[in-house]
Structure formats: C-alpha cells, structure tokens
Amino acid sequence: MRPAIVLPLHDPEGIHLPRLIQFIPTLKILFDRAIINIPPSTRQAQPEIVRIFLTDPFFTGMTCAESPVGEHFRLLYTFAAQATHPDQVLHLCYIDRLTFILHTQYFQAFCDDIQSVTASQTPLIFQRSSLAWDAHPRNYRDIEGMVTRAGEWLFHKSIDFAWCHMAVQAGLLAEVLPRTRQTDLSIVTEMTLEMLESIHSIEVDWLAWEDPFILNRNPKELKTERENSSSETCKRLAYVLPMLQLLYQHSLKQEAHVL
Image 1 (tube, rainbow, N blue to C red):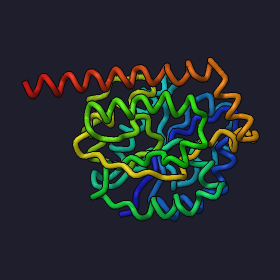
Image 2 (tube, rainbow, N blue to C red; image 1 turned 180 degrees about the horizontal axis):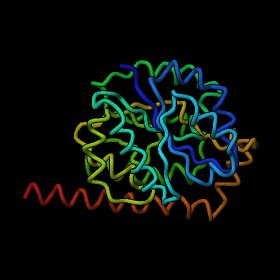
Image 3 (cartoon, one colour; image 1 turned 120 degrees about the vertical axis):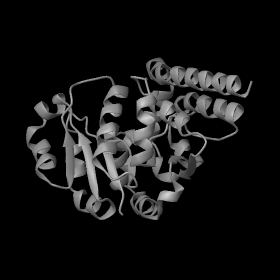
Image 4 (cartoon, helix red, strand yellow; image 1 turned 135 degrees about the horizontal axis):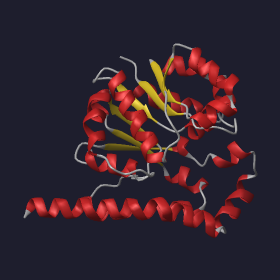
C-alpha cells in the first residue's frame, strides 16, 4: 500500500499552489492520494487554482472554516485518519516546505526517502540535519533547539518536537488526536509526546530553509535580516514556549506514574 500525503493548503496569496500544480504527476507517483483542506480565504482569493485541486480525484478535500493553526491541523489530520485504511502510512507536511523541495536540488533525495519508508519504521519524524539547520537563521535554530535539548534531558531522545514532516500510520494517528488539546503550532509537540515511546527519527538535508526560495530573496541577506529581527525572534518564542511547557508537563506525569 502506497502512502498518502496530508497537506494543509493555506495560500491566499497564491505563492505555493501554482508551484505545486506542475508537480501533481510526481505526487501521484509517490503517493496513493493527497488529503487536503483549503480554508475559505484561499478558496476566495485563488478560485481557479483551487478548482484544479478540487476536481482532480487524486485529491480528497475537506471543508473547513478559518481557525487557529493547531485546530486547523487537528481537523485535517482527524479527517485523514478517518478517510484512510488504519495501516496506511500518512505523510504530514507543509505546503511551503514541499514546494521548496520539489523545485530544488533536494528533489531526488526526498523522493528516495518517501519511497523507502515502511510502516514498521513509523511513527517517523524527518528532522533537520546539521546541514539543513545551517541554512536557517541562527535564532530559528537556537530557539527551536531549546525544545530538542530539553527533550534530550527529560526523555533521553533527540527529537525535533517542532517537526516539519512526520510519517505515521492512520490507525495510530486516530488514537492520538483525541488526546490533543493545543490550538497553536505546539500541537505537533503534543502529538509527538503521545507517541514518544515508539517514535523514530531520521535527519535529512531536504528540510533546509525554504524562505529564500519562496520569497525569491538572496539567502545570505534574508538570513541576516531575520537574525537581527526582534519580531522574528518573538515569533519563534511564541510557539516554542508552549512546546517547552508541554515537555515539562509530560515529564511530571511520567514521574507521578513511576511514584
């Protein structure tokens, strides 16, 4: 059974969807189907492009309202788990990361990794390698790295709790999601903690920083700009602090269980 890809398609500016269209034939080779949700802002702003996705039987879409990112993910992932066989592997990822990978030198490595994953290897987090992190601004790496390091101290596992790509069987995802409560990006940490005992990880270069490609900016200039931006640092802290709180709470539960 080939895997399915699960993809939130929030793109009211029309930056990502046009780039993704040309790779639909590739997605059909890699995946059995694509499960998507397209919020009203994107539907209204990009009706012609959205129609392409909604009329192609490869895509299974769900209707959704505008909602916080964590709730948006929970609704889509719940729908995906219900719409697929429990044994099917689902690849949860982001549209900006995917379009970057498909258009760059990381394309073949991504295809090879997707096709090599077996159900027995899941749940599996594809996490950023040292090379991938080197492409990111320093404040991105250091702030998100706090969560990884805290996890190493608390759980003795080196896990990217702010992951960008996870492979998980639909049946396990269906078990995990009802136990999640977060409505922001920290839902990805919450999901990971629910699977912590069985989770695996692999480092990949294809999760390098996507923004210079997406925004058509010089990588060095944009990196320096972001590293010197207080607003960018605060943006990272806004989702990392709840992640750290989740790790702390999970650790307390584990200690209470032991006692």
